Image (cartoon, rainbow, N blue to C red):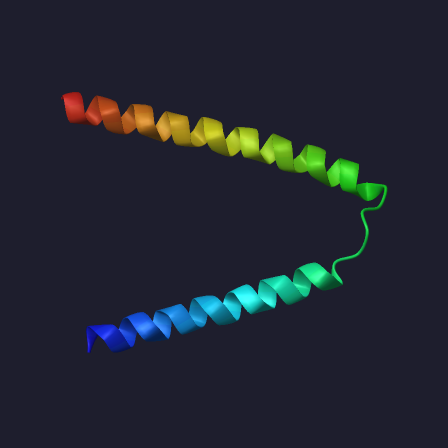
Length: 65
């Protein structure tokens, strides 16, 4: 029974990968707005990293209590 679940999961992963590859082939060439999107992404990425670091510190301080 476990093997069936693993095989089903692998099948789903392979289908998802095929969809990603197909989407990558269809993606348009970078345009002028891509720079703005990259900056927004980097800003968001920095905020997420800060939030995760804060959560890590909170968890570490809870463990030491």
